[in-house]
Length: 467
Ligand code: FAD
Image 1 (cartoon, rainbow, N blue to C red):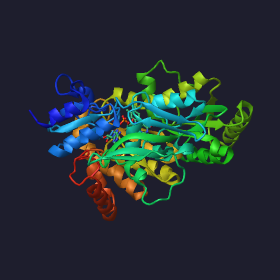
Image 2: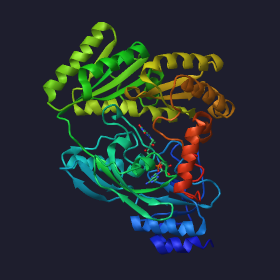
Image 3: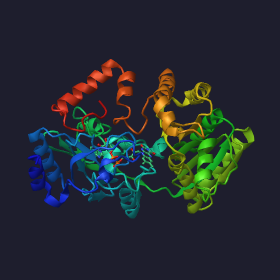
Image 4: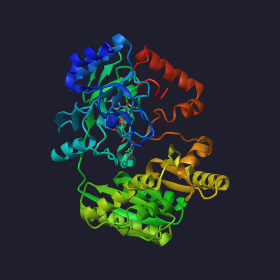
């Protein structure tokens, strides 16, 4: 028996060191693309236990893979197949430590489910604005480790922008407490920003102090059909100028993505007829319903008159608003129902998105006739989920085996040519590691490797991910 297992049992208790039985919930990723085998699944219940686990692993040179809700989309959260990595699951670390309403902050353990954080803020009459379709199972530690985005970035920013402080267990097993809820702190290198987005490769986030916001007095949601991506960008500009910081969501969906939702989830009502593009927009207003409605409807009426939009449906109730968001959030699930696909989570300057889409659609469909494009995403942030579904009728697995690398090359070359990024919000993980080396400048990669070497000199934190 590996001697580290005894130390791990002593650190967290035998019941929280799993080595037998069905461990697939921890060993297989959400997309079922990565299937690993762990030396053990270890479930600490406190920061001190995390530190003890890290020290035990460091003493024996055993690598650790940290996992929150295991909803990541780039293969960062599961062990490799070697059976030598400890899978550190943080879901027992789930205490809300403090809500400080006057400071507009909340401090939580890293394993808190995002939805719990939202509900706790709501119960205090406040709001935590990070919101994404996996919020019922992803954890705040995972959100920060991948610097998650979601649906309200256009107003409130990414997970990074919503975090004031962190508590981290370093690769040596020391605890860094940086949880002070300060909005200003110019005392040298920003360690918090180093760990956010590091995908568990530099240390383990065990707690975070998060920014809260006042709840809006009214929220308006609408779907609008637009004739082109140019028109969608024009509508975004108009919404930004008329609504200002009241614009809290701006999503775009191509016709095929909503067609897949119609096909696989026919019970979901789609209030507008099929169109080449549909936009979902949301406004949050501090004054109240009447003020919100006059601004929102004024925007949509002007857009209809100018031909920027061709039709619109405004949600009249909270349930209708939720149903509109549910349509948008059902796209990845409808895509999964349709079969295997190639996902691209890309970021582009918003002004260049129409040209990118036109040229890249044309390049892909010319080379692979019948290929189907599921293009949707957070247009307000310049973030597209530009996904590629194999041609209908054939074997999607065969298509991916033969053409995934070619499809990626076309898409990522176009992203590079348009000054974009190959990862907007999902991270690098194992999925995009080689692509990162191809696309990032040698100087940037050198600096990143120097940081990794300094903070994790023995390479035991999530090895083989990101770098
Ligand atoms: P995991 O999947 O467990 O881990 C993700 C990465 O973080 C891994 O590298 C892991 O090692 C590391 N990690 C986890 N916890 C810690 C920790 N405490 N300390 C250090 N490292 C850690 N993302 C978006 O940005 N926007 C979206 O709109 C969005 N929508 C999604 C919709 C669906 C249906 C799904 C399944 C995923 C979506 N995602 C989205 C992906 C997103 O990255 C994750 O849902 C979430 O941020 C990951 O949290 P998690 O707790 O599940 O992390």
